[in-house]
View 1 (cartoon, rainbow, N blue to C red):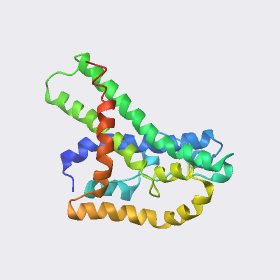
View 2: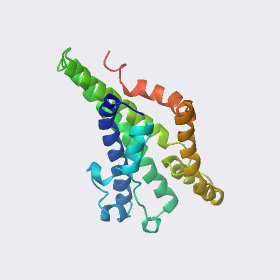
View 3: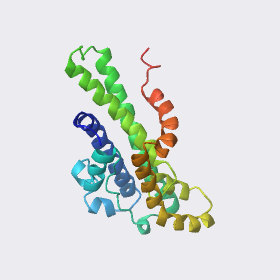
View 4: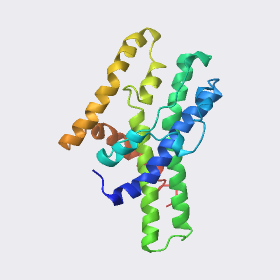
Length: 215
């Protein structure tokens, strides 16, 4: 379970990351002709429209959480397989864009000497760094090709169509498999997901931090 300090430093990055992630799904779905998310009030940057109560509580108690998935009706899409993959891809891409934006803003504040050596400045730096890390982890985590993660939809749009039947059957057990891994990591202290995510997230973090650009 996270302590209060952890929650306060993680919450902004987590809230804005999940909100922008789900908003991007809704925006691309709407652009591709599906009005479902828009009609349900999900085409918004208001966090209250996207955050899930259980998912938010899981963040506090387990250190892992989620938002409400954006509803998509493939019947509205001109090319369902391709368009579903594009809609799914929008979420992780949005998180990387948000991480880059936070990195540029942080470097701008540091270079402009707008942050002194006060405790308030340290908190601001921590919030930005946490937001960058969280958004990168959200992006990498979501491209794992296990239902209901975005990676499963992206993969379904890439693999030969005759493979999709077997993959659709995996969708029934995918969420339980994923939750089992999270629970196992929480109980044992050995996170299999972290061992998958972190080797990918660390080089992305170094690139997104743009240190090579500001030195």
